[in-house]
Image 1 (cartoon, rainbow, N blue to C red):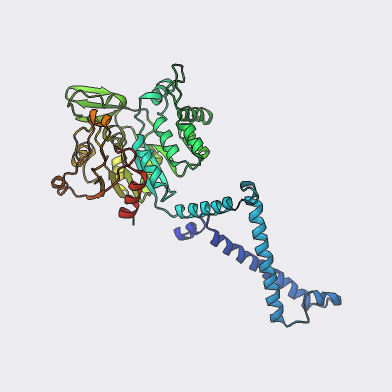
Image 2 (cartoon, one colour):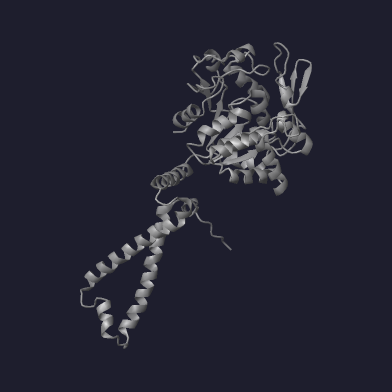
Length: 433
């Protein structure tokens, strides 16, 4: 038996969302169909031998021509319909608006319109971790609501490391930062999730957001489910998933030295450079949700973030690079604006790409975004630690089969970090057009 499968265009037409015009059109069609049904019944009644009182002729305006009656009844029906829509809207939105507050009504309308526009945005997947990924998400969420953040699970330092060791769960810290970056709640709620307890007690050093995610994981019985429910609490715009569901440890080799644990990777001595990083256990499988999101994406963004502790731990997951090569999406790498002592001290843009190529192969990206604004001085503390601007080697870049985009993406507030709005604007205006 042949099974009917609706076409993709038909399925998109009936997809739930704020498609107000199409639902109004369907409502109008349904009213017309009901009216036709009533008309057929009345026609049968009128054509029968049933005799009506004289006042029925007055009420139904039988003394007027049919064309005039049609116009009058149509005008009355449209007027009643509009009044019903107006009152229905007041009834539904009344609990969310204070009486007489026109600014709230205007803000709500703007919010609904923005939600509708964001629903049309491209399907974006962002890979990374730490501050870099959350910076990107803060900017990109203003252009699309179809966001999937794929987060590294190698973090083992600070509050995340303590919770991971005690409860044997995925580290919640990077997920917390992504949740607050994509949140649409009041600023106070975001501050609450980022609040870190002080003191020497058992809570000292823990952030409230990490503890909240842990509590949600115990209630729901699943870390992924906990992320989804936490996203609902914060009204997150998008989805956040781990790159792998395995408990992995990041290791790095530097000469004859092996550093075990993500928090120990950047702690080299002197000019020691990292030769390779790898995950233990070997070849942790990719999270199926992450795989599906990448294959469905229109735009995949890797970075910004620490090369060896945020970017490569995602790419080293078994199946991740294969999926990235298989997806039809545009693939973008966002290079850091400043080097990181112990990881990429003295690296150029080309050396960042060469490190990725040495680990997972080349020709992975279509575009590379490079900062062109070298003017903002780095803080004295950063310079003392060995941090420097990442330079663009044009001669080396000319031999790479990738498009380089040079743009001012430096944050004026923190000159060693990207600016969310600048970065998102470059991606959406110069790459996704």
